[in-house]
Length: 72
Image (cartoon, rainbow, N blue to C red):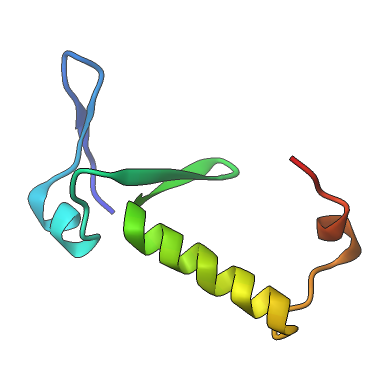
């Protein structure tokens, strides 16, 4: 983590080493996590989601009743 500035157009400027560490390129995902958010490389996020879905479908991860009732 590091402090970042917002430019005069309202954009959050992420420094080079952090962009390189997170493999941030043109397409990113902003993922809400309660009182914070994460910035992901879009393809890495999609891969993470597919892996999680596969684990749920295989029974490797079991969802609680509250999560099963969740709908968007």
